[in-house]
Image (cartoon, rainbow, N blue to C red; front, top):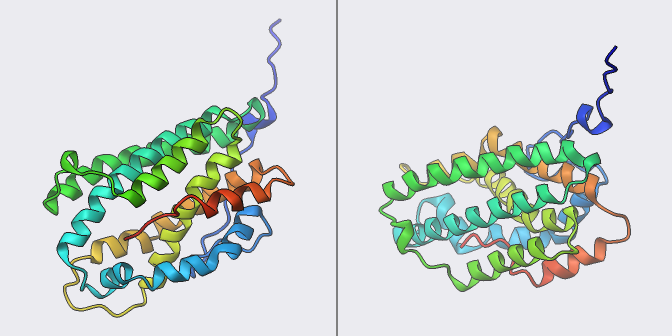
Length: 234
């Protein structure tokens, strides 16, 4: 008689993200991701008041500035795909439910990259001709450095991705209420990052980060974030 082995705990577990908040902020659940957000919220407000961001909200940003942004965004997306793959590799057998969640996010980034090519074409941007700016290079290098370090943990890698994921959701929520000129050419971008579909992504990454976090390592994230160059939106 064949004895069937019961499934492992990880096989029956799943990531349980918090409900997205209307404000675009992470749920105040006491996790490390919520703490990181609170400790860096001043930088989020600086981003909100950046002329580039306000120009998108009001529809007054010069077209060439947005075209440059589209080219830089493709580089960011590529680095995110690599980092998600690196995060999956760091999942232990007990963390396979986290690996499955990361697999879904990696699939989403790859889909977004394909859509980004068509989006860039509509804006007259040839992605193959784009060169990363110094700010883009700094952030992409930071993600790559942490992802490739042999002693980096799963939480370490996730900490490089969370700033952009959460910041964009928060900006989308904040800018959704800002009056803009009729026919705002950036309305599609605003709709994307204020949509429920995007708002659901940061809580997944935060749930992974919170579960993977090892107590006593918080200072590692804050020191790294201080020198990363941050998530540029302009």
